[in-house]
Image (cartoon, rainbow, N blue to C red; front, side, top):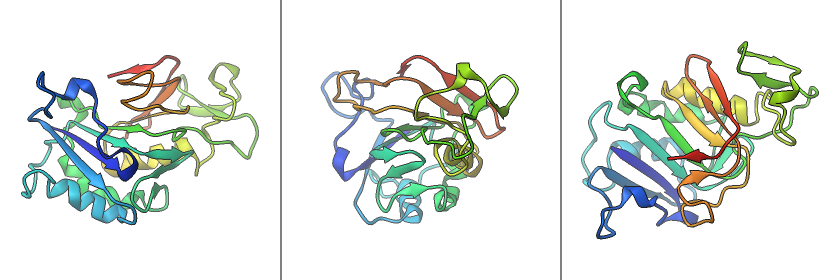
Length: 207
């Protein structure tokens, strides 16, 4: 199934491909609105208890989790906010993700700037060629240096570890499903895998 976690700012956001021809939500899609002030642990429980049926979902049944919210480098502004300090509270969701080897797509974060963040140690960025931080011009992004542990890259690495799945987020401002580029992430984006592999993609993400 596909699960949307939508902040109150984006309560009705859903991508066109996840709607039926008559405009209703497809049967394999669940949309969960997260009100302001909700803790990360309660977000995890809301997913497990399934907002549509009120019954717990089956393990390994989430093949994509989409988070629609505002954001900033290393932080998702949903509920009380998700960041590197509390992302471990999502751990109860781990057994519910479809393994990547079985077609799972992990977590897509459709929120502004989440993968970004300025390094405090110079122009270091993550180089996917050798899996290490290095001074490498072709991986440099103005305002989006990704080696800062508590900025976007560090946050995504921790989320991938906690959930044991792939995390995808963009470096740039996002316009969401109702924006000018509906159905994709605007600008360059990064994929982070639980085994430490990272891919920085210099093109728009298309669902």
